[in-house]
Image (cartoon, rainbow, N blue to C red; front, side):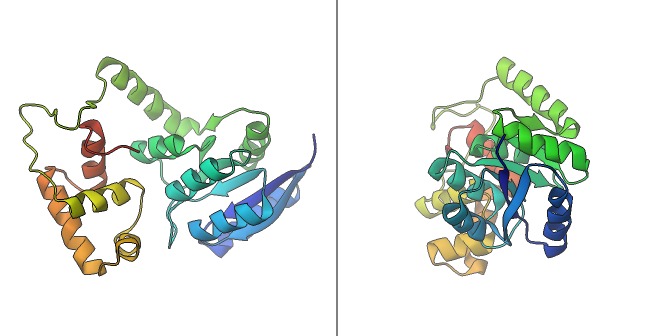
Length: 225
């Protein structure tokens, strides 16, 4: 097998340095670049065309999930492995939907990480055992109770107040994993204004938080990924 070229994407320099050191001693793996945020990861992928991108989720300017989606759509020959501290079920699913070929937690062993990098190049996928059970449970739930797809059809016991066009725009960007600041930059709005829109969306969807609002919207066909 030829050398696997890897791009590291993480907003913490010490994490990138640690990963670079681990991979330096792995046979057949070469770190070709480092990115401090999702936007830089996308740009460097286009420039360097790595075989694998190790992608963090929570990063400034552009989060890991929208960055993963962009990379997988634009350069399908590049494989993305999400490497994060977050094992939240919704994030796992959004990462996989975005096109990631692997989902690992940062406390994984160096041996597992190295094998995951080699594995995705061979066409394999790897989900961290700590979150794999959640994925299987959710697939089983969806098999029994598929999500609603029609945009107007909602359960009788959940009356959703219609969203304004601007709220729908904000909601779609929330589903991409963007922060209030990133949404504001995209829509040319003040961060405080975006925060007000998000609060209104959460209230109308009767959600507990922004993640719950996105999940509710997806399940009731209000938005699509």
